[in-house]
Image 1 (tube, protein in one colour):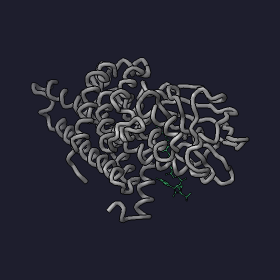
Image 2 (cartoon, protein in one colour; image 1 turned 180 degrees about the vertical axis):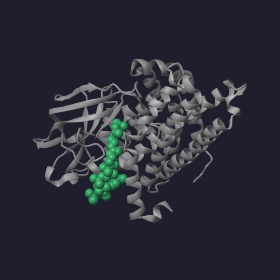
Image 3 (cartoon, protein in one colour; image 1 turned 60 degrees about the horizontal axis):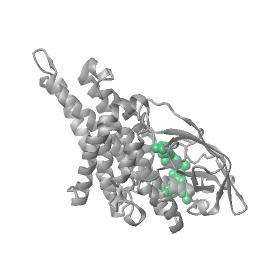
Image 4 (cartoon, protein in one colour; image 1 turned 90 degrees about the horizontal axis):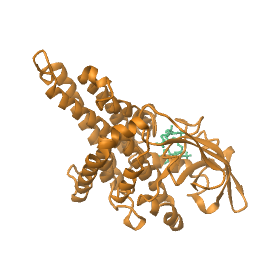
Length: 385
Ligand code: CAA
């Protein structure tokens, strides 16, 4: 793995940092308080090429790579975790599978406007009874005429209300179980497709998390992504990439909390000295810095393997597991360093703490990451050596 960034990766990192500091950080507190989706700055992310970083320029993207993508997500998350997940879902969970499995016609319609940020997409896999057990799909796609008729309910869909298209997974052959799942691209406005609810959440409050309903929703066969019965594999392969993005998001949240803790430890005095001079505070800061650095290396490694064409599912799971646990631990300790001030809304560490929690849950819980890692260890030890 190369530890040095290429010129292009460093440029994207700097551009994302500048944008995050100037345009995202100033609104992060208010959009969290108001649970308001930040349409203007999401559009700006599109203009800056952040909505399709690893998508080739010919399809509206920036033509860069997964390492650059993680650098950008981290920078955006350092300012606002909601912006980071909006961007991450569009890049990894929507654009990536359309790029990998779409026909040229599908790419023209369902990729180019999305990778360029003119539209945003979402990924509709989770159902009320299919969370960690994602293959337990009950949404049906019945073949009828020259297309399919979808019936079912999807929950916890990031970008669900704002998205112009959803990548939807449904059973085309119930008897075949997970091998009977097929993927479809469904545009907003299609009859029978409605957004029924937006969730009010603990964290990432400015991102949109919606429930989608499909009732006799007719989708042409031309909107099927990949082969019949390949949907579950497409979903799991997509999540491998998505988990690298969530690792980067967790890393950005942890870094923001750590930086706030260091600044506070320098200025706040107790017992006549800045609290950073007390060893117990120093230990907390040292643990934060060390685990953040380790999470960064795991995330970079998973992204680098993706870019180099090596298997990266277990590495992505390790990165997401460790970065999410680090984000939760670091944000907890950052509040501890701030004492009572950390518990009030005026200081941003309480937002980082609330935002960190979801990184242990979405795109596979920490427990599911361990399952993915263990299966790989037992099945192919050589891959992680
Ligand atoms: N890539 C491609 N194919 C894969 C794969 C991968 N990474 N991992 C497994 N497969 C294949 C297997 O080889 C198997 O193929 P066959 O049918 O030919 O045998 C098939 O997929 C099924 O694999 P498993 O036997 O491993 O499937 P499983 O039912 O035991 O599930 C699981 C495995 C790891 C638990 C999986 O269900 C999982 O990852 N669950 C968590 C789901 C998740 O992350 N959901 C998040 C949704 S998105 C979200 O959070 C909201 C948002 O908008 C941000």
